[in-house]
Image 1 (tube, helix red, strand yellow):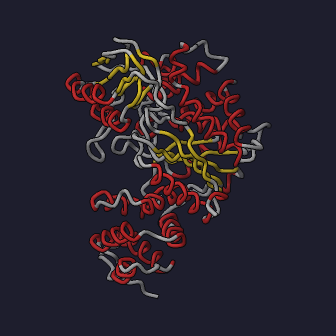
Image 2 (cartoon, helix red, strand yellow):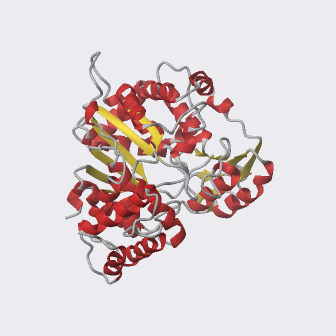
Image 3 (cartoon, helix red, strand yellow):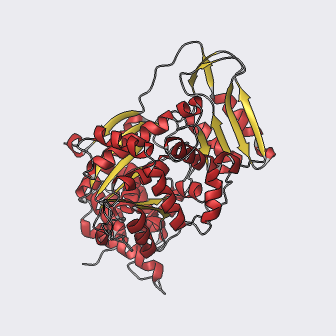
Length: 478
């Protein structure tokens, strides 16, 4: 059966249901044209692809259409086959936030839980984590990892599998041959006003995650002022779509809807987020002679709580804990006994071309942080830290140099913000609220003004917002 792009566009434009064959044919022809010497006659042009994206944006997709689109994108190129590892592959994905570095803690925790109990045995759990770069006001895991000396995020799939086999997890970027359909569609979405479609977001995220050969997936769907989906109903719809799509593909999928109304943890940036995680690893590891001051540990409390909540679900789905709550307890134990830190170091050793340099950075992560310019903001009055626009803080981090102004642009390793207070904290006049870091003193003024504008101190204690607001499983979809 020949699929004509114009027919597919018109069917969706007119509100008709697209068949699996129409969706698969369109995506297949879209990808094949990339390697063709001459444009095939049935290949959709950029204009036709953009038209279909807009039709989907306006008309939406039903559950079967969304599943078909996701699967067509998933199998549009290479996929990661984890069956040779004889492990249960489980991963997490965050829809993006400010200061969200939980993946750096979660992946080694999960690997530690699945570690072999006898020589020659393989990992019972593994976490193949394929991550992204900074986007808009949110940070990217790859940019953070690349501040570690010599760390490589671009790995061929055979090496990625080898690291999974030996370390229990690997953290790398999408290869050019992994889900190429998403790369093509995303570039067009970015220029056609269709990025915000929950259906296209679902297909983009889930096609990449499913292509990693996962048995289970835990989603961290952010909501609040610092999230892409700031409205709760929009984030809830996205979470439900992703859970249903994952379950239809045979992957156990759970979504935790979590608050992004303030930066997660103490730091937002690149190296400084790695620093926060290293300091937490070392604080809890018995073999490390290091302890965080109580106040700094408190400021990282939400990061730790989210880490254990997400890891708890991953360990539960992977059969390591009877309940998610038991999984959270196990997660905390694996952090506290140093197992997770050992697995993190093992992964870095395998993925870094300068492991000695990485070890030197980890030996004193605060000293390795070398911004050339800093500035501290103090409170102009006493009261309670009552509100902030977390997205504005994310843009301030970006303008300090930690994020991108255009795709492919370099990012600063040492730019960012340290938060000295959390929402609801009692604040005294003159107390430090935040410290700004940059590698260019000229970049400090605008972010300072942005923070002064958004950090609001009031006389009354604000109503607390739960960190985990809702958990969506397949049982909630009925």
